[in-house]
Figure 1: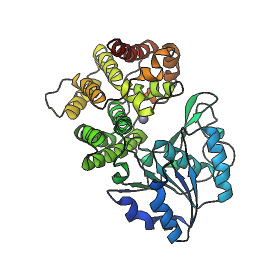
Figure 2: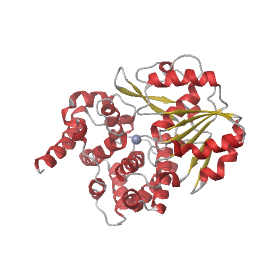
Figure 3: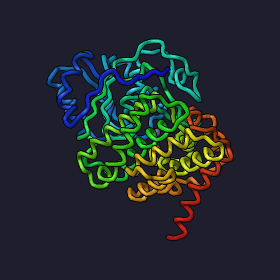
Figure 4: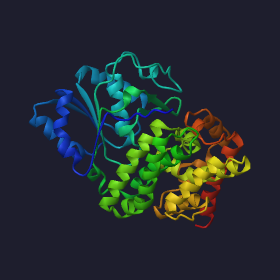
Length: 391
Ligand SMILES: [Zn+2]
């Protein structure tokens, strides 16, 4: 038995934003527009609102989605009283917009509804209609039911998660990702990769997410370099599609140790989420493969074997070729090492202990104990230090 949920309506393709503007009218007459700092991105929407005599208010998001910021914006949103919330931007912008859609009609504080540091109670009132328009190809927040927020006090990331939070409309227009910086695109693309990879090998996969992961991984393998390094437009579309598939996969299957360790590290390192998961991935994969060999888990090994075939596009690939593939992509994309963000100065025992408490790690194909997680962190750090000794 399995179930599958995603956004109510998805419109995908070059020019999708322009062609879908009239659909916004079905949600009402006033919009709270949540954007990043680049005003150009939302110009098309703002022009449309003016043409239609719609009431709107634009909120500009800078930096991480802090809980205190969400509280303040939700109070402003309640005063404005919008019919819908629209988020256009990267992962953080969509997470803020999604949280506001949920919190504006509900009483109480953000802490009532988030996990880890909050009470995690279900929303009392249905969310406002929420429209997600991603301008990066990474998190897949446009098709997921959760928003990741940051608690400044506790220095941890927390989730606001509820089936109510699936967007009512996701408009995925790959042209919005054209021209993006190569390292930033690389971090986003590798986040999408990690969602697909972890969901594919996780402890609770299902036949539908398997199909989704295989297609997403295939597109990433074909297009990641051309999209991120060369800004090749058809490849950018592949990445937007793969990111969407990654969002669906993580909402309906589970994740694993790369995301578990990343959520523990993200409160400690000021590094992009996609970079953390990307740099951890090859070592998590290698560790899982070696534990699977020790435990004789042929089912898990078969998954990694298939992963290697998809990523290398070679039917004779060895199981370890999957790890090698990730490593070489990281080098080719010239993504920074985590030592730059202070990974090697964190206390690995504590990072591992916190990681074991995350929801993501419970999806790992095999249980990894604290020592195994420490070994993964040591290997990532060794790689950094090894690299610097050759400078
Ligand atoms: Zn992720």
